[in-house]
Amino acid sequence: MTGGQHTEIDSLHTGPGWAPRENFLQEVNRFTSEDAWTREWQYPSVRALVARGADFLVGLDRPFPMTFARVVRRTLRRRFLREALWNGNVEAPLSSVFTDREHIVRWVIAISPMRSC
Image (cartoon, rainbow, N blue to C red):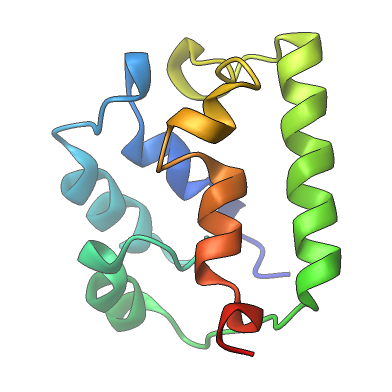
């Protein structure tokens, strides 16, 4: 544990209506300027900023079946419970898995190293 706060990077990136927030870069800069913090690595646009402010990086390489099961379970829970995420957003209808290229379930499949097997 770093002793600092953890702020989910999606909460800095995603505004109402799932729109990217205009002040994302400034928020990440403010967050990574603090003495101690923990955050995720996604969003290539701010990786250099995060790396510059980090003392160390920890990478997790979870097996695809575990990751996929967790994403599906979390997505279903959030959808059925209408759990509020960042800035009032809620999971889209489950049918959006088939229509939204950016849906988290499709994204996890797309980045999976198993796709190249």
